[in-house]
Image (tube, rainbow, N blue to C red):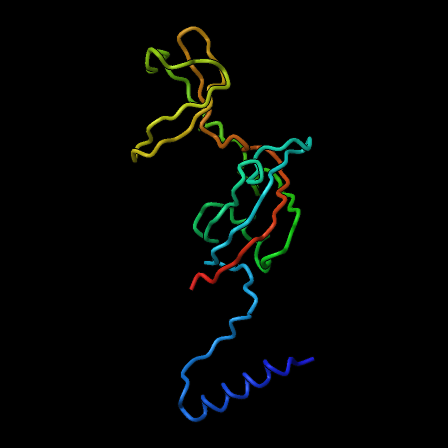
Length: 176
């Protein structure tokens, strides 16, 4: 069923464009669907296979904001968001390779204990920041300490994990 007010606006726009009075009119009530370049505000909860919560914006009390296609999320996760709009909620199950990737053995490094500052807390499970080649900080998790050797895993903490994302889309803005 056509909305009478919207039909009238469409007729006025059509008439005005034929008269050369309007070059472009947009419908401000148009629903924005998530697509590449969309600015999206959403809440999420990441759950592991056992149901435990790995991360949640609800726990932080602040929604996530990002632009689709900027590399913040895996391509597979972004594809699952395409077509959603504000108000939509979804449960998205992703295999490890499609979520945070598989653990890469090349990202596990054995370092000499002397490379760590004297006051650095060296315990298994501690997350430490390391300087990458480009000067950016890279987090690493201490996974083993054996004598003078410290093993640090630079894989994403959820690498190798199948996960479930519960998402609630709060806002979608055009990226144009």
